Image (cartoon, rainbow, N blue to C red; front, top):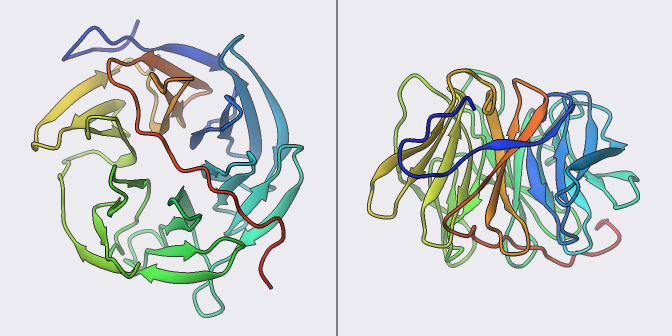
Length: 282
């Protein structure tokens, strides 16, 4: 099958094949899986019959993606240098380009909090140390939220209590500002790409060396999946828990053309699907 499972009987299998190097993946409140391709394609994936359709395009290169309560998608596009809003019919509009003084360079990953703020990592210029995180308020008003993660920030996840934003690790203060950075875990000779929490507080981390790790709240790092043949994991860059009970992990493989999936022993942490204004703020 291609994967080495070092800790349990978890097995990866192909969900859909034929996508254009998918990077980000999100689970919508409509029960569909959404992912994006390197030419801006926006795909809708059915879990029931394992099929997909392209229903929109951002016009650039899609990276991370998040969904709101109405199943609008918010796609980070590295070529357009913006977060693009995609409605369920496929219509697109500009949601955020950053601020007047700090326009987006390489928006990489979006994540919603409970009140509809969208945190967006901007990786900046490669090896230049100018990455940052924006906070986009409901409706599109944007500000630089943190410059404390300049080293190419990428995937993000909110902690189960919504008090921490995991990039490396950035604490969210009671007044909404960014707190001090704490390093949770360091990897050698690999690039962590995306993170997701399960219901027990384990942090799943996918890495470009065709691996997925689980980091426990007690500080234990376990290897969940490794695929040195690249038949099931091929540069995994995005993942999400999906299904009615969030019991299935779906992984996007940038190095190939597929989404892969695994039935998990522990449910995923539910994400926030905020109700946002229909019209952008002026």
